[in-house]
Length: 503
Picture (tube, rainbow, N blue to C red):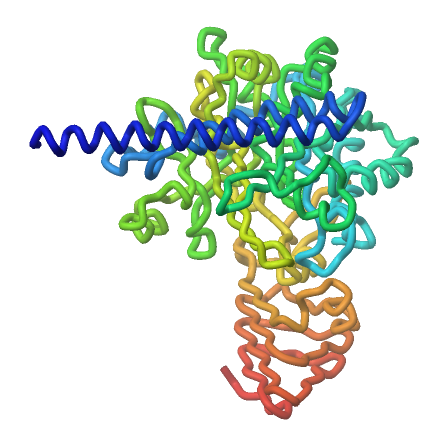
């Protein structure tokens, strides 16, 4: 390399560093201005939030290129991904109640039901026999507490979008045998993509300011849990571990075998973090996976993968497992790592366009990305049944059907289904909103023998319809198909003006 090239590189680096400092200084000034618009408790909460945001923004400005070097990625050693069957085969000791009394269940409850056409928190959508996600969660924990005579509390991490509505709804569980706590995720300012300054003019959430703020992803759980004071409160009460999962994952119930496995690790290898992973199918190719990197278990998300390797990342043969976001984490370790500022989660840059057309970015983190900071972390390869998320009306159809039975708030696959995999269901845009979805089914069809269902266009289902094998129903634009009551469709294609063909 020539001296001139060398000097130009140094010059460029200095210029970039100067720019970074300018952006950081400008951002800090704007945040201080915003803080002057609030008083008392609101200002104190916002200051704590902004401290976390400043740290994230600083790291965002420093970032250069992908956060992983592809040639340093290795498959995790077998002894760090424990098979669930082996864990279950160990059985349970008599002291299960002792372990349960050290556990707290945390549900990520920051999301709204807007993608399914509902208002308010997603957790209050009815998913089974008029039970909401929240109802099922409370029933599960209450059943545990009664069965083992223990006190497993439920903690909800709300966002500013869901907090008020959730607190009103919680009143209905006053007489249930579950202690319920809530805390709020941080509230971060959205950043103007061009100027790299906050779009907010004050701390209010009114009118056009409503779009100026966002909850910064579930990786924020560590800071907001700590800042709320609830973390210390639970440690003081003798709690040792949290089981964290998304509230819309109906498979994420407290598993006594995993809990026992966690509690019985050797004292000198005390496990601080377990991530439940499950085998990837073609539907899960974008899901984060566990890798070995710099001698640590690490979560690799698709956003971190260099473009040239995205197809390799999606391969089911190379990366066989993905993260379910069911996590078991030590409370004492969260406290230690937060106080040492040692979490170091990769930043997810999420671009958005606001209603007025303004391009913004929001900086987020994922809860599982902190795995590399914890001591003796493990993966547990669990059955697919522990990953049953309800993100769309297609998922809703599955969990409402006779494929599952409901027992004490938990859904289990019907013993009458001959194969353990769930059918592949794809419902068209006419079914996207929950209200529209419900009006199109007089009753949920029998799906015990279904492999694949595709429905597109204006289609309705009468009572007691039975679907078997592969069923494809396509109503052309302007046409409507009404599947009559009592119809049995087995390996059929239904199209146009209700012509039924063998598949």
